[in-house]
Length: 165
Image (cartoon, rainbow, N blue to C red; front, side, top):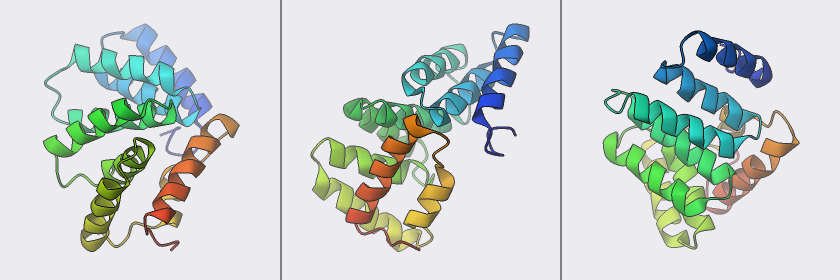
């Protein structure tokens, strides 16, 4: 709740306390990672997500964790890893929309602009609500560390044809 209200610093502290109480809580590790991404600590987040996956490899919503791992890799500049995780998320849940803009950005960063354009065009045909405004709302820049990769993603998506609003 703290992360979703725009306070990732407080959420990180809450997750740290929760993990002290129950270090085997896989979703706590995953949510902790997601909050770290919002603080610009993407490399750390990848390790937390891998812990969550190791603790609960049969998690029904593991596609969400794959998406977050892809987002963390994209933010950390590990673009091939981002492609890997985001493709896994989409393979597991093809209708899950969140990996698509991230994967398109990762494709561009790995020199696969044609794939990125095709992915975005197909997604916009099915999900016209995707806009640069919605991307910025979904991925706010809480600090300078996270602002750079998120603005880069918005610029890439805009270049791929995602409308402003």
